[in-house]
Length: 66
Image (cartoon, rainbow, N blue to C red; front, side, top):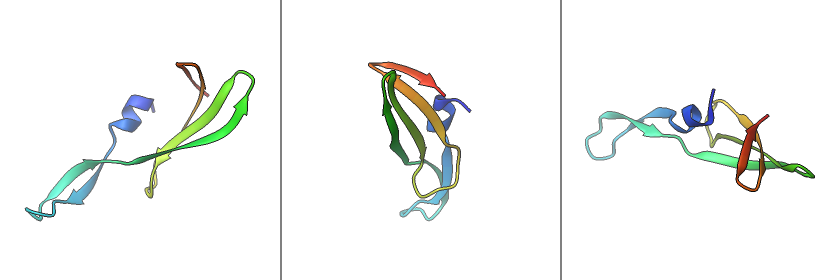
């Protein structure tokens, strides 16, 4: 799964006004794995949901999947 695909993931929810089922975007958590000489390792995963977790290394504005 790509980062874009992960960020586009939706879940089913109930609209508070219409009471109809709707798709809503997930909320994500970004956790720091470790600070390394070649950048910062972090991972992103859905908050309070089961789902994919993606790991990355970032140095400056360069993002590398790991």
